[in-house]
Image (cartoon, rainbow, N blue to C red; front, side, top):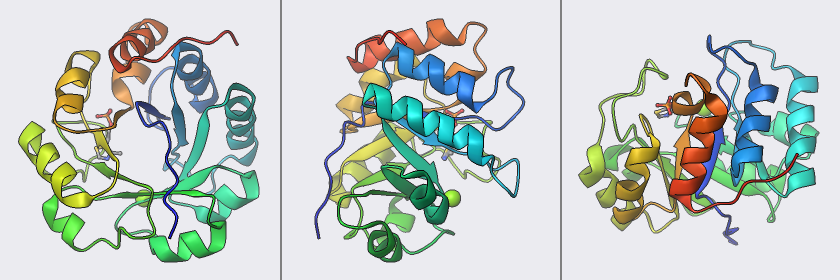
Length: 213
Ligand code: TZP
Ligand code: MG
């Protein structure tokens, strides 16, 4: 099975919570700052906003940013997304691979070593793990695994790993030193007083370059 290599360094995830701006505006800020991946995550509505997701998909395509849809491989396919990100309760990664094809990016979450042991990583291109640090963004995220937990998951997974949960620009270097290929971030950007400035700090820490939109 082919594993698609993608640049995971600065992986931005849209916030469906109560931050000031909506997913499209958030994605613009992240792309302009230098995000390498944008994940459309919208758990606030049972029926995700197709037009909003499509606008983000188009912006990503124009700027060479990978566009990933959370949970929903049918939406991913309908949008022509680069891929899908699946949690433990979502579809089987092998099914997503079958539906989306060999060139698609299939990502999976494993919060810790126990979940990793239960995960079929063979069809996947990368693994998201955490929360690495405490987070208020995902109520059922479970206990933080810390940098040691992150390095253990990296060692055992055999896949590129994205660290997630409570990550700020100041924690990027330690995550990378623990073996992560990138960091995934929501609230440190979307809930910042100045989201564009926060996104620029992430880009600097991740070593990515800003874009003109
Ligand atoms: N999965 C594990 S922690 C988390 C998800 C989706 C939330 C990450 O959000 P934040 O705001 O960057 O801590
Ligand atoms: Mg999910």
